[in-house]
Length: 276
Image (cartoon, rainbow, N blue to C red; front, side, top):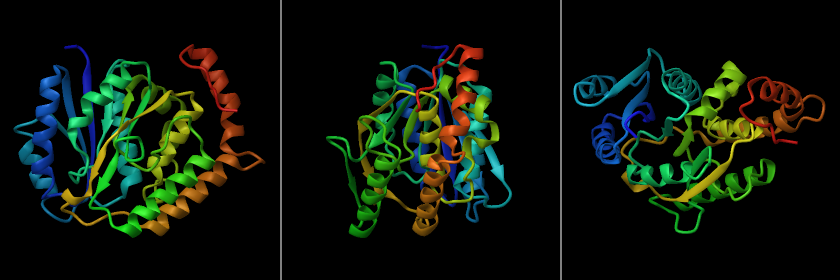
């Protein structure tokens, strides 16, 4: 296990209160697992003391910081984090993306790894799996989240998958390296549309034939210290645009990428494109 790394991706914007709480918890869990590990943080032009606090924590933890001088949004931050992770990882490494606001508990990391070791490429923490739930989410936000996930399950069905909007996921590094190599800058195309990137990654990886699984988890929204960065109207618009781009009958993604993926698969002998 010593040669295998866990790379934790953390997009951070105005999280001065949460970072000192979250990093020690991740550190303790990873240390007990016996893997090497790296914290890869995207500091997205925070207006509070987030950047300063991260610099201080570099003295304590194996921390790599990608800094934006201006706030560019979650899409661009996630793009930068996954591209950097693809550069520094080996195919047998593990990439885990978490929110930086202390709503995702690191105690689920061993369950992620257990599922990945069973042969899955993408494992999502799921509030909707048996045993999962959410604490501190008001009725309106809970209803919006439920309806959004129902919409996504209908439009982008993945067998046995119910959680499309939670960013707490684990990935085999090999599938991410392939995705970045194949899609390039288009791995995250809808960068300016709120939290749409969380769904777009699933869609792109499904097109590549990734194997998906879920683990139940409890979303601890009651632990959130910072204000929500999600603008529901923008993200909803992003979901609609993503559905159109994928299903457009005269040159949508599922048509455009189908032949390209088959050619790539044949040349690289790494995976079979399964999307029809």
